[in-house]
Image (cartoon, rainbow, N blue to C red; front, side, top):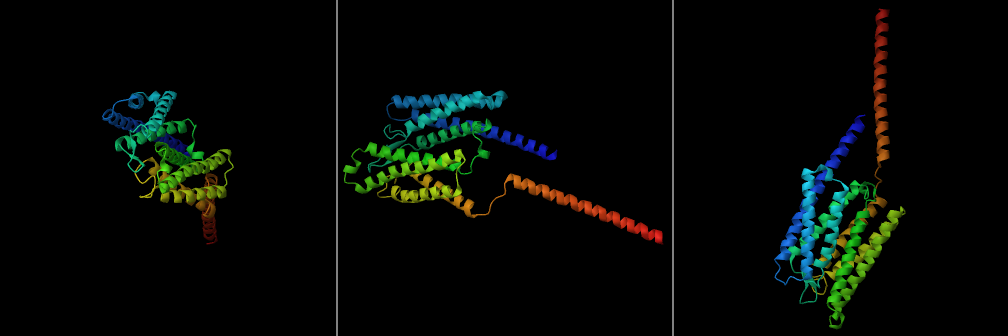
Length: 331
C-alpha cells in the first residue's frame, strides 16, 4: 500500500514537472521568435519575399506561442490537450521551414559566402536564435508526444536519441558542404585543389554518417540491435569523423574554418560518435547493471530475510522466558 502511494506521488510530481518544463519551452520559443523577428525587421537589405516569409513564420509562431502561454496560466484544460499538440506541431513545422530558409547561403540572411569561398555566419543573432527557436519548438512537441505515449523515452534504447542526433548532424554536414559546392560551381576548377578535395570529403562524410546512423535506428525499432554490431558502427563513424574534423575545420584549407553550420555539425558528429563508442564499449565489457525486476527481487529477498531475523529473535526471547520460568519452578 505504501509503495503504491509513493509511486502515485512520484507520478504526479513527474507530471507536474513535465507541464512546467513544457511551459518554459513555450516561453523560450516566444522569446527566441521575438529576437528573430526583430532582427529580420531591422536588416538593411531590401525586404523581399524571403524576408516576408520569415516575418510571417515568426509572427504566427509568436501568436500561437502566446496562446499556449496564456492557456497554461488561465485554462487548465488546454494543458496536454490535442489543441496544444496541434499548436506545437504547427510551430515546429514553421520553424523547420524557417531554419532551412534562414541558413540557406543563397538568401544571404544568417550566413554568407566569405572571400575565401567558405560559408560563415553573417548575422549571429539570426543564426543562433533561429536554431534556438527550432530546438525549443521541437522540445515542446517531443514533450507532448511523450505524454501521449507517441514517444516513450523511458522504454526506448538508451542510444537511440544519440543516433538520431548523429543522423541530423550528418544531414547538416551533407547539406552545408553541398551548398558550398553549389554556391561556388567552379570550386574545383579554381586551382584550389586542397579545398576542393576537403569539400568533397565533407559531402562523403555526410552521406556515410547518415547511412551509418540509419542502420542502428532501423535495427532498434525492429528489436534486433546487438551491442557488438552497434559498437562496430559507432567506431566506424568515429574514424570517419576523426578525419573529418581534422580535414574540414582546418584553419587553412578546411571548408569549415569559419563558424557556421558545417563547423558545428562536424564537431557534433565527432562528439556523438565518441559518446556512442564509449557507451557501447561500456555495455560490452563493463559490469551489467541490474534491471528493475532484479532489483525488486533483491528487495523482496532482503525484506524476507529481515522478517526472518525478527521472527528468530522473537522465538529466542520466548525460549529464554520459558527457561527462566523453569528455573523459578525448580527453586
